[in-house]
Length: 389
Image (cartoon, rainbow, N blue to C red; front, side, top):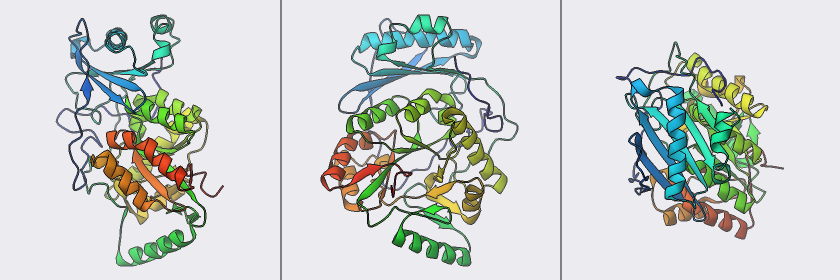
């Protein structure tokens, strides 16, 4: 069983009155409420189950079951017992599922996905269900994570700033002028310049496919399934705390030949943080990802596209290339599948960098058509690292 890697500075146990860093995320103008997900009813019911949500990618379905344990019952043994039972009954309710993911939280401090981390997470692909109980009993199951519940001495402050829409550089007039020059040169010639990547080679009919904010239970297996079907590799800018709680998804990503990159540990906006806090957000995520992949992390994208000279300098000191985007269909705004597809088509260009999110239903359902359109228009879809190859 995985209690996972030590990231002592950034494993948080937050006071109930204070939101966890990254828990409160601003919304871009025009964001619509997401379509309500299908839910399942378990038989017989499990009192601790809060909800069982189901999502399809157009080919297969996956489920995410959330359980809430009272503090008196919040032990590893009880969490494991209920997670196993919930996975089995979720499959009983819907035997066609590709995968069932289970997240067990304390009921007293549950605040949704961005709040305090779960007590336990479990991923059960359909083909692993038959041997699940014996594997868990013999401590041989590799798709379970048990929270070590290490407290951090200095949590990063909660920062709620402008919503994600376009990359925004913040600085003095002189800094902005120098940055705009770098950006113009980077867009004109493509490729990495001074630790920045605005787009690939504009002379090559090639685009990088990127996903922000991964991994999320239920959605992430569906995204990987679509990429596998299309024979496409992508770059995932992952949030450290998400990888902390769902490490097996990051391992799936790496095994699938995709590229893993840094999107900070808590998905907080960086400009108002100190250099030390920025470094902690990036370096802790680097450490976590390197421990999982055995490879040095090369790329970073600032949450919300908000950054300053200080942010860029810290990233560069850590050996990270800061990556932006040229094509943002706004899937996180829930604009509708047809709108996502139209926006994608409008901004598709040689050397482009496409921005999607692994937990956006409209982007998920649009993805097969996006990849089909790119292929029909003669584009090779690759990773950030694959641009220019």
